[in-house]
Image 1 (cartoon, one colour):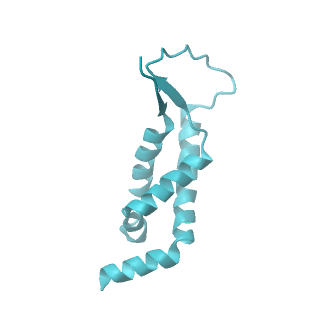
Image 2: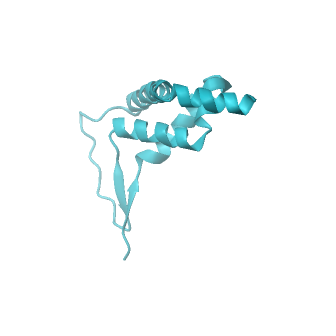
Length: 108
């Protein structure tokens, strides 16, 4: 039987990044993160700040016990959104000169 490690956090983060970016103006936010390199930097930055959950495909899932320390789904989603918004600003600031140059080339 073949086993494969699957990041369960990644699909959620990808979806939520798209949803959060929809709240921002097209320029510079959506334009910047429509560029593959900067979208990947954003995804990596967000994932590095969140607890990632994994499973192994091909292995029966163990029964999960809910603990009192388990955050609610709403609290987790709000936290992810806060991290995404902070990461958007971080990546834009970190790459401001390069993005400015790219945008100037596109408008010329």
